[in-house]
Length: 219
Image 1 (cartoon, rainbow, N blue to C red):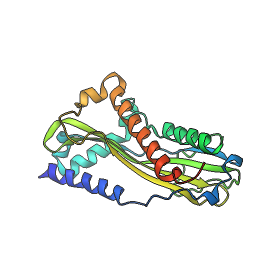
Image 2: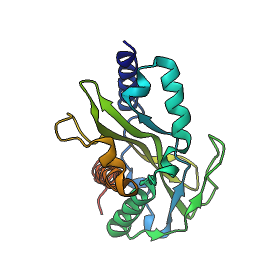
Image 3: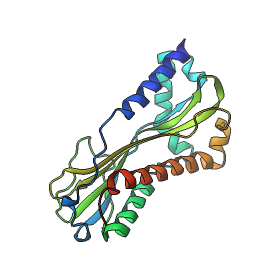
Image 4: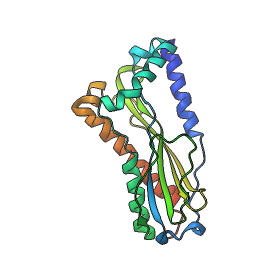
């Protein structure tokens, strides 16, 4: 019953992400991109959620234990948030498509929630902010795992502070356990498979942002 409770909670989080803010295609009227610098934004990643059946079996107590473990899990296991690379891909695509300039990275690590971007008419902020990442076991197979990565991608006008492009990307690495890795496989060699999986999902998110947000704008 406890496993079912935790599985339902995870499913609810996934559904809420899918039902989140709608895609905002970039409006050509906002573009004098060749005169702007594309500024990537570093955001602090949330707690990495390591969901194992051994913890889920203890219900709420197990969930709290996983949250506590997640506070240091990524650092201790060499797991890297791929969002900076996602932003770099978007920058490269906008440079290629619109002739945009590349700006210096803005570090928002540790900034309180809701902190506004600096007002700068010469900047367009490219912000890929992770809202959920981790791994979870399958309800029918507790020895194989899927990786999840959820990120909200914003393109923000530095002059007005308004969002002019937006895409919510929520990815799972596997739909069934037959081809999914074990936890040992995900974490061996300093989490090499975990990191390559996260990187692949971030690349897919960048491609979707290009198609859904930038694809509507004529070069």
